[in-house]
Image (cartoon, rainbow, N blue to C red; front, side):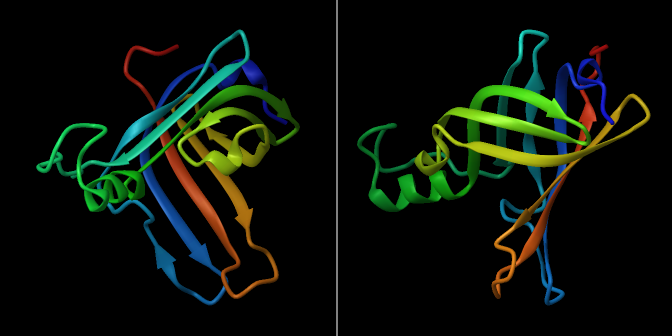
Amino acid sequence: MINPSDLIGRWDIISWLQLYDDGRRQAPLGERLEGFIRYTPEGDMICMIANADRKNFETGGQWNASEAEKAAAYSSMLAYAGRYRVEGDAVVHEVQTSLFPNWKGGEQRRRIRLEGRDALFIEARLEDRTPEARIAQLAWRRANGEK
C-alpha cells in the first residue's frame, strides 16, 4: 500500500520500456529521454516525457511547419495532466488534458512501486489478450531538492 504523500513532488524520467508478451522490447520515445511527472499535495498531476534528441522545426513555426515535422514532434512526446488518486498499490490519473486527445476525460490506472525515497516505478498492462499485449514500465528518480 502506497502512502499518497510519498508521491508528492517532481520525479524525473529515467526510462520507458514496452515489454511485449512475445519477448519484444521497445523504447517508444527512444533510449534518451527527458521529462518528469509531478504530483502536488492538492491532487494535481502533470506528466511530460520526450525524446531528448527532438529536432527543431525547419519549415516554419509551431503552427505552420510542415505536416511531417508536426507529426514527428507529436510522435516524440507524451504529455498529459489532471488529477490523481492512490488506490492501494495503484495510482489513477484522471486525465483532464492530453496531447493524445483520446485520453481526455478518462482514467489511466498504473501500478506503482517505491524503492526507498528516490526511485519510483510505474507499470501498466496494455492491450491484454492481443498480439500487442505488453507491460509499459517507466522508471523515475526523485528530482534534486525534492522532499
